[in-house]
Length: 452
Image (cartoon, rainbow, N blue to C red):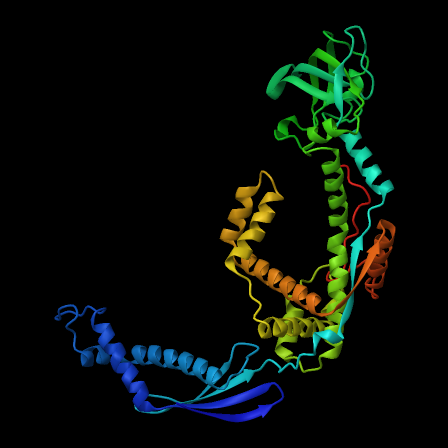
């Protein structure tokens, strides 16, 4: 096989490749022998059909199959021998071919740019962390104390009030007819939460133990049985017990009740939960800071076909920022990706199968009750696993870069972190329309306090 550079302009290269006719003939002969064990022809025992007979019968199809294989093999070898990094599928232009002739074709290639990596020591970024003040921690702990209520029995003669817990059995009918799901025993609801049926709680205010109470309520619009949606139901309720809320003490006993070892452990868990809420957004800020520096200091041409494919990959929907679909924005994203990949290759950074499995296990643990769904999702969607691998690869490269650059540590209060995230989101709002949300760099502002 002979390979010559026909032309080279920027990132576009054309190779001229000639495969000798004798080499093609050898491959044809080998394929004809292989087909002896595969083809059945009348008048011949299997495996005994002469190659010449096979050639006469299927010559054109066999030649096409062999040429297709030769094109693939010679293309791959030419790219490997020339040590070229291609940006897209090569285009083949056949010049001469045919049985008894040399195979002559041109290979049109879009190449990836050569990237001269800068020394990481010249870059710097701020490594933000969250300082959880005593006030914020106390507020979260008090929320937990109020959320995880416990109740104690009221006196038999005491009537229920808002905030009390009422335990009851019920038997419900619609149009004097029973229906599926119309019976319940030991149902406990906290009056005022309105979590059973809208308006149901208020009708239980003023009941006491052993009362019988008739309650009228409207079944929900989204009831599983369509024929029951928005229907008036009559509930005959037998009050089993009435309980009043018992004040929780923030102590070791309470901490154990909600899954911590003791109060100290609970405080640590709550503190970690608060910092984790903000760490995702703060990591994105650090990452953007690093990527912006890398993109500005590495100058090289980006293949036009990659830019076009990047723009095409952005979905057309009302929430897509028009600026995000511009050639300039697409080029920046590709440039950043190419730089990261180059740092990854040069430093032999890889993602192992174990790392992918561990990440999937993390997702499984974070979604109790949906373990099977998560596993099946990745098993049935190879593209999802590939996306996960790409995300882990990028994260690993960013962490490597962070370990090499100058990182200035800075501790932020909750308010400072929220202001920074809000400010970044405001700066990233699309200029064309205030109704369009920027998809790529929009950072989610964590809630100040979560009750769970």
